[in-house]
Image (cartoon, rainbow over all chains, first blue to last red; front, side):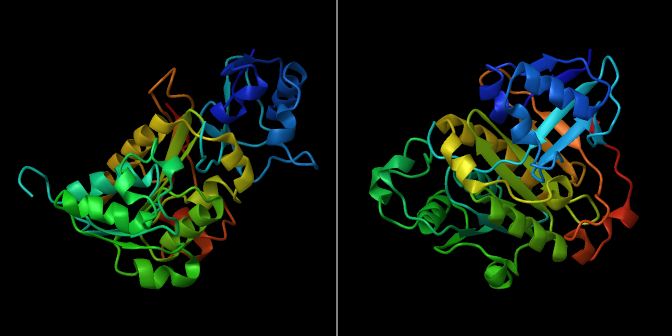
Length: 89
Length: 238
């Protein structure tokens, strides 16, 4: 199954898991599958219309990708969010 | 400076004098780069655990001038301005800079810095840290830009609420400084790339993503060099 690499900023939603295997044939499928396993993550990645949020970028096997990009069994789907500074942890 | 290779760039603007700005300023200053440091804030007691360039004697002082003082104390050249870097004042603050480096905590300012750098043909680094990781993006004329990567700023309140672990900013700031010094010496090999550190507690290896220009990018449309015409960048992840 393809693997979704979850960025550090979203791992509070995956119980700390950095990589999650999902059954999917497109990026959109993968995000939906990830959200079924870890509810709430799709809302952080997609806007209300179901499009990628403008501060989120997705790469499949290292290539720029969109929600309709096909994913293979061994592909890694990397979610890369824009971040800025924080205060205290 | 004895033993230090003279950089091609002699002047740089550093936006942000906090957790990322500290290691950036000290490293760039020690590399012989003359710095203009810009930050609107004063040093507070709550800053000291992760902004280790400051001491209790700096409490209440402008961060920009206190950090410039730390650079000067180590033999560097720096001046500090207590103001928020904005596009309106950018030409005055950064017009004489050959390189611009962002380490501030405001998402909108990061985009403004990148947009200004692209429009004025300056190489730049945008650094950020959050929770246990961070990233550093490298830009240069002719390469894909920060707005090609991310179209709009993330919500600032979200970032600040999430926080950042103190030592993380030192690590990310150090990486950003190395990339900036590379640019200063003319190394554009990482232009159009972002170095992503997900969680420094578990891995110090970055995910390096090289991305291509985004057709229709409004920032690139104002660039003196069209990234779509300048070169073809192939996306890759290592």
